[in-house]
Image (cartoon, rainbow, N blue to C red; front, side):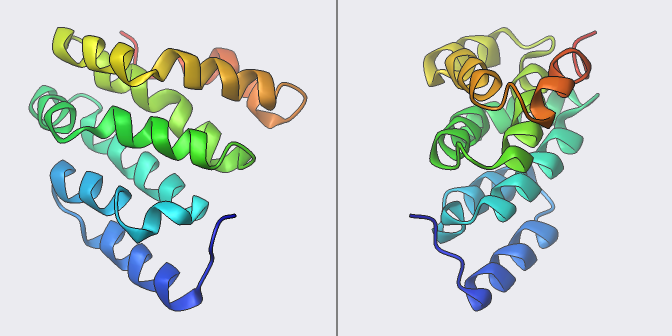
Length: 139
């Protein structure tokens, strides 16, 4: 059951906001903050913005395990529409022009996590995001 302790959420929010590198952001996703869907959603959104149009950050994020962290977040918070929507586009951003990240995404189960999210939230807003989100980072 997800935990939402106000002080933990506040510290987590600060850690994510203060993260200036993809490595720090991925590290924040793996801490106790992993239990709070809102924080994972914030991290996925920030990570997506940090890797979009930035090949160096994509490589660093891949090496830091960003796709696996997002997959773990998606699986751990399957009922959170906000997190699922935020995390749906992250794998496509990570694999753009990066063969290593494509392999890492496959090994982390990214495709299966995205399919599961789409199926789980088919009747919800995520359904409306399928076409738009899936192509956000794909050239």
